[in-house]
Length: 248
Length: 261
Image 1 (cartoon, rainbow over the protein chains, first blue to last red):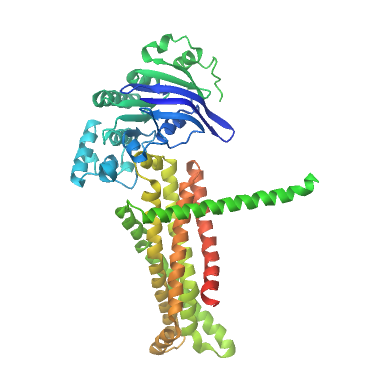
Image 2: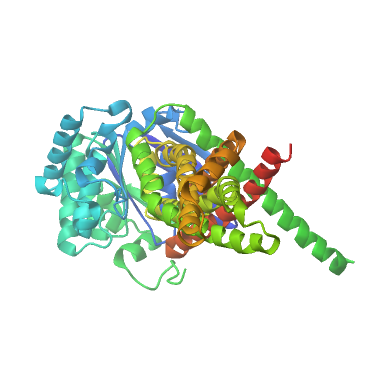
């Protein structure tokens, strides 16, 4: 279980997170929604330790993440980045098997390649993609390789940063289906940030809406349409008028 | 009164900012060195860096050195003729290349070629979240990206300087024997007899220092790049400027330390 208690973060005078309280149950899929620039990525990176909060506590299974053994902590995570964040200098299979080729999870090279090809197959890519470089792939394929890399070491917790941004509706559907299947199959805890409401409905058990640096609303996805929260209603209906200012 | 103190405030803020920057670079360099000394060590990245910094820099280093050596021979011959000292061409080319021009020109070429490439590559990795991805994959970017490049530069740039010295002397030899009427055997004998071990040692020490400066600056500016294409451009430009100025400053200090005794 991941818990965030009263987490604050500012960049200079700009306050991004202003007292975030959120709980993500083990084995559940939490989707965080909110407008652009509301701090969703900062929230996610704070959990991973890529951004250090100014104050507040983030715990994983009751242990403060800032005091946890860093390698052991990160070994439990997988992450799909918004742009894929694939390493240009490495072929696809070495991107997927990156964690399996070095560090505490190191395997023999042949075995790591086998696992990489199996994970590529799992995300719908053929083995001939394995020896290509990321620059030779389309955006959708890069996203799938990123997904394969995120699940390669079978992590307990997977973070998805805007997994469908920049993809066509069909490829978005494919990625959503893959995320849902993988999370269900692996029993992993998932935390996703997105503005894509189709994604939200496809992959979320619970939804949290971030606005003005705080969690404006949180609850099961089934209750999202009847929440009665004007901010959430405006966001999911995509109205230009409402409590959320269209110009930010 | 406030208006009078304003320039002092500007000066003070500028000085403090400069000192803070120097402190950050020093801490970064010390961190890079500490990561070189502690496992894990990424051998593949080290070998790639050796290839990029050393082997692939040979053509530019060789061409720079050969033309410089040749031009130096012509200049010394023409200048020496004013007081009938044309015969010192081999000695001055040798000492000029080994003590000064070899290390400095190789250092500046490395700053242009390698520092810019390291800064642009790491900055692009930063803006495309590849460095964050490394961290989430339990890999320390300082160990994986910085330590192998800095170690490779520390080891291979002195070798490049040595190669540059030899090629520069060869450039002088070619011009002197080809168009200035020098005897080849006598030229080489004068060159070898004139150089002292300290000359060669100083060349290698400077090469090591300049290599370290070039790699650290490339990595530092890359890791601290701003966002987007403009951020990558600024990081690259800043890295090359800083490396070039620091190489020239370090050359002055090292020359003073090695030869003023």
